Length: 137
View (tube, rainbow, N blue to C red):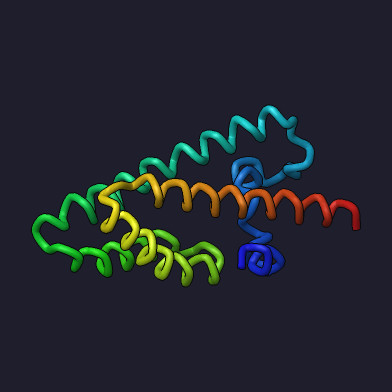
């Protein structure tokens, strides 16, 4: 699904995220160390996202509302994806539900964090790959 999304125009406009920091330069012109530091920093941001959404909103509040916190958490999670590519925004709702179920059943954010990081870095990878392919054309 990520490979299909990566050939859409709105995806190519957003990814790789490094282009949004310095939009006048092409990501292929950055040294590999700069890209690595950026991607590690980008990945660290997902720890905060998982702590808030699956940790606080889900696991923290499930003491009061049991599993009824999954759908509101997923809805709010989808809202932070507004302005991103359409397929990413729509899939974030269903992904939020899936990650919520995983966190609720395991009582941990680790599964969601690993999945979230994997998808995010896969989208970055396809963004870099597509920008390289476009530079050859």
